[in-house]
Amino acid sequence: MLRQIIKPTTEHYNLHIPKEYLNHEVEILVLPFSYPLDKETKIIKKEKKSLAGALSKYANPALIDSEKNIAWDRLTKDKNDLS
Image 1 (cartoon, rainbow, N blue to C red):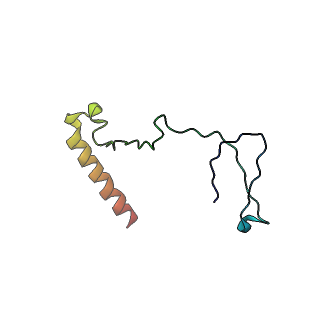
Image 2: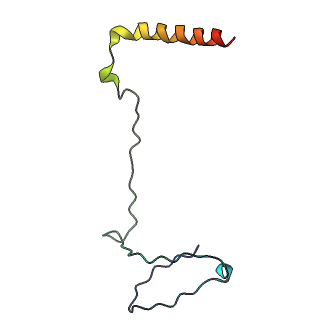
Image 3: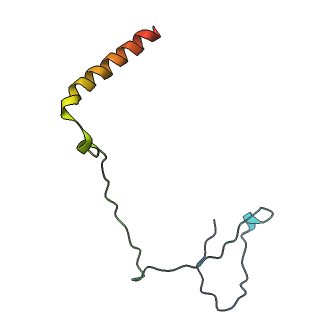
């Protein structure tokens, strides 16, 4: 891959194509480029958020034990049906 950042002073620019790209299809893009305001690479740190407990406000504690039993009964029934 060839990448070059230039500051053109005219509307025309001669582009050097590397030999390994000759007789191959290539894509040439011209896009505006801008540096960060302080001209230093800024690293954005993203906090890793967990989804654990995200729906806890919708939980009904009275139903949790019965849901566990229902899930276990369904699992064992499905497993026995496959046999």
